[in-house]
Length: 266
Ligand code: NAD
Image 1 (cartoon, rainbow, N blue to C red):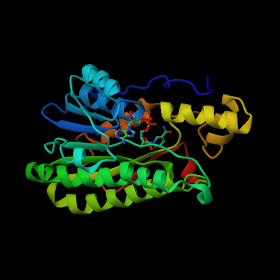
Image 2 (cartoon, helix red, strand yellow):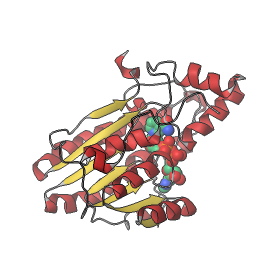
Image 3 (cartoon, helix red, strand yellow):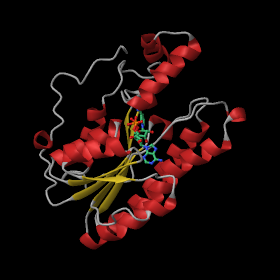
Image 4 (cartoon, helix red, strand yellow):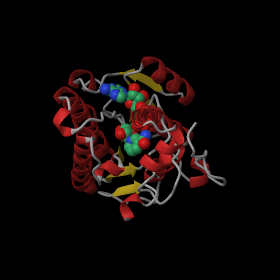
């Protein structure tokens, strides 16, 4: 397995530890069947929110809905029509679903480029359009967009992903500016490499491509630009998402919080 360790000693990702009570709030989390989205759904439900678990993977969505006491919605976010049928009455929107495709620009398949924009930019736009009126009516709302260090920096062979995440950062800022008079904040959380199935697949692929073992792919390829030399755990990302939904962050909007171990500081 990879070199990084589990959640750091002393880590308390619980709502109680953060003093956050989301009883009476409803959240919608996309890509909630796995990885970061799953951790966000669990954290928000742990704070008392009712959670709509949205994912294209029916079994994963059902499993997380069962764990959170929430409701599963099996939706392909690349398709506009079913996105338009998701619940509009949500106080917290976490735009998390995403996918990766790695190829040089000259070989990048146009259909994959478009798919990444549909899932990671167009679906968040449609969901904002759909859910903001309810938040505005209630005078409170939290939008958290799971961006990436690649929303702030570029890497080779990630044209579709870097383009989509930069666009998401811009969309998030517009939502912040328009939402402010209505008590709605919008922020990006922008991690480096997180230990999720998405990254585990990349480790395996890069290990095969470079002829390196998995530990060297993590330490030399993935963590090469990070000052903190371990992968982030999904629960650490979810703890920041939860904090953004709490009572102390009303003035924090239009920002991008880099959880990147110092990558963007260099
Ligand atoms: P993951 O693969 O573990 O989970 C992604 C989830 O999104 C899956 O459950 C998948 O079924 C769902 N999904 C994908 N396409 C979908 C579609 N068309 N419709 C509905 N659901 C769909 O990945 P993850 O690492 O947890 O990534 C979550 C988000 O975090 C993504 O936006 C990703 O870009 C971002 N992110 C991940 C990392 C990382 O290192 N893992 C780093 C920075 C940002």
